[in-house]
Each structure stands twice: as C-alpha cells, then as structure tokens.
Length: 336
Ligand code: AQP
Image (cartoon, rainbow, N blue to C red; front, side, top):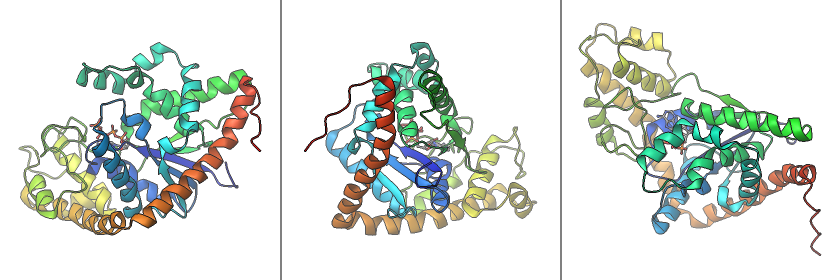
C-alpha cells in the first residue's frame, strides 16, 4: 500500500508484435483498474534480453510499446508507465531474490521448459531466473494484485512463495501478491490451433491477430479461423475453436457467453466469424489512431518517460531501503 491506495503492477515484453491475447488478457484490464488503485505498468525490457534482440529494433519496439500503453487508455498522469531498465531497483532486487530461489523451483517452470526447447542454442541463466526477476518487479512496489493472463499463474505463485519465504526469515517486508484475472480473455487461443495459446512468436501469421494488423487483415484472419463440424455457436470443451471465438467476442463487446450464444443461435459460422472480426476491428481501430498520434509526439513521450522513471524509483526505493537493512547490507553513505 502506498499513499493509502492498494497497488497494481504488471508489465509486457517488447518482443515481437503484440497480439490480441496480450491486449485482452492484460492491457485491457489494466485500464479498468487505474481509478481504484495505484498502478505501475512497465515495459519489461530487462526480461526481453533472455532472447537475443536486434538493438535498433528492440529500442524501437520498447518505445512503441510504451506509446501503446497510453494509446490503450492508460493516462500517464494517473498510471506510472516506465521502462524496467530505467529503474535499477528491479535488477538489484532480482539478484537478491535469486539468492532465495531454489534452482529446482525455476527448472519446474513451464515457460522456462518451453522457451529452452524453442531456443536450444541460447539457454542462458536469465531464461532460468526470469521468474525471480518477475517476482522482484512485483514485490518492489508492495503489489496487491497482478493483472496478467492465466499463462502467468505459475510465475505468480513463485512470487508469492518468495514473498512469504523472505517475510518468514526477516519479518514483514513484502505484501504477498495475488493474480487478478479478467472475466473474459484470460487465455486467448491460436486461431489456427485452438489448443495452443495465441502467441507473438507463432510462425503461422494467420494464427494470431496482431494489434497493428489493419482492418482487412483482421477480417480475413477471422474468416480463416478454425472451427468444427458441429455447426452450433456454443461454449464447451468439445468446440475449442468456437469457444475461443466466443471468448474474443465477449471480451470485445462486454457481452456474456450466454448473450453471445443466444445472439448467434441458428446462424452459421460464417456470419458468426464475420461478427467477431468486426468486434475486434471496432476495438483495435481507435487504438491504431491514438497510437499514431502519440508516437509522433516525441517531446510528450520523452517527458512521460523521464517523469515516470523517477516516480517508479521513488516508490521502489521505499521498499529497497527496508530490504537492504533487513538483509544487513551496510548503510549507504549520503551523497552531499
Ligand atoms: N494468449 C493470451 N491470452 C491472454 N493473455 C495473454 N498474455 C500473453 N498471451 C496471452 C498476457 O500478456 C501479458 C504480456 O506477456 P509477455 O509480454 O510476457 O509476453 P508473453 O506472455 O511471453 O507473450 P507471448 O505472446 O506468449 O510471447 P512469446 O510468443 O514471445 O512467448 C501477460 O500478462 C500474459 O499473461
């Protein structure tokens, strides 16, 4: 808790092109929480170098992502929007928490196993310790809730364990965080293989809707989305493709599953898929327009970046002073 408000923290990697999954599973929910909580939303660029990045492309993507946060509706006066690498406390607490995390815990992480298999030529130590850095991101701000997609549940469980472990050794230091899941869009699946998560790095471009896809591309991808031969718009385990489309439709229109099933009862998949495509275009088009305005305004973005880096450091230091003292690091001399 800071300034009498409970804290929300979340972040995204500036790797690849953001998908509709990233938006509906995370970003869209972040916007809803800004009034009630003190919010920190960061571009987790330290995490991104666990995979090799082209420097110029990486810098551009990170800035685009920050602009996209604002375009999605996050007012940088009310939400602290910043780059992880601009606040050195993330790396410091990340290292500290590494020393309280067991290697076995990290090796069990599904994301580590998946990424290690995908990048077998570069299984670096950062790929393994990714979750303890993520725990540091969260614990640094005495975070109460972390709005993420359901794929991050395992990492969040580790953050909770680390908070409890540290508190048990040194006394109350960190708030133990909880995951915050939206009602819809918790796990958006691939449009081509609905048993797989929609992901930035999918090699099939028709499997994912990218946030920067134009309207015609979005419509075309939904037309090609895999369904089934049942022919009924119904949310159930046996119809994963159709259920995924229902989830997307509901997340974009704020309708319930029942309302959606009723709306498309007796209609064919063609009509249903067209409606889903239109609903997504309706959400993403304003986002594109706003993004184009923001990314052009260099002075405005630079000001946001500077002010919010300072703000994040101010609050992170409150926690770090406690942590350093509890561990027994020597007091830092004051600079005159
Ligand atoms: N398909 C999804 N459905 C719902 N939420 C999702 N998120 C990611 N994919 C889905 C949520 O988006 C946030 C940002 O995640 P990230 O930047 O850490 O990226 P990621 O989870 O690594 O995303 P990808 O698309 O899976 O990237 P690649 O392909 O590079 O591994 C998180 O809150 C996540 O839950």
